[in-house]
Length: 129
Image (cartoon, rainbow, N blue to C red; front, side):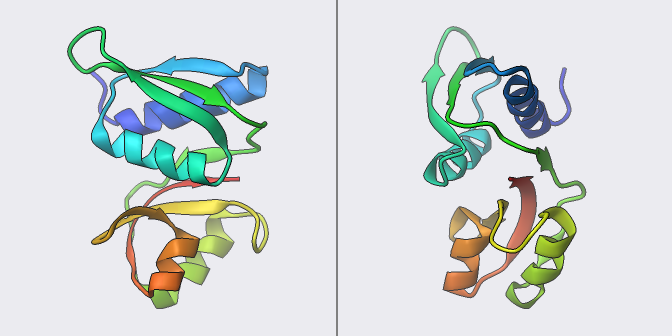
């Protein structure tokens, strides 16, 4: 059994992007993974995704849009205040305004850009650029 399903899906996306594949099947279809994929879709890192209910847990069919330079899961999931977001942006992203951090907040899963606009913090989940 897998311990970190979000990490498995993010690594599948990264490996498929490096190999030049445009479509992958990732499992299981958890709600948190779906919300992270929705944020990635909003910022055009993936073209689309859908849930395939074949069995218990289900699967995601993910269609990649462009080549992703790098993506990964942030462990441990650091709690971050809005004032400290810039520190983690400089740690995980290569340049300013290049890539996104994905975090979970009291308002749901969102990017660092949306969290900064709302003035809220949360726990870091992943980065994509």
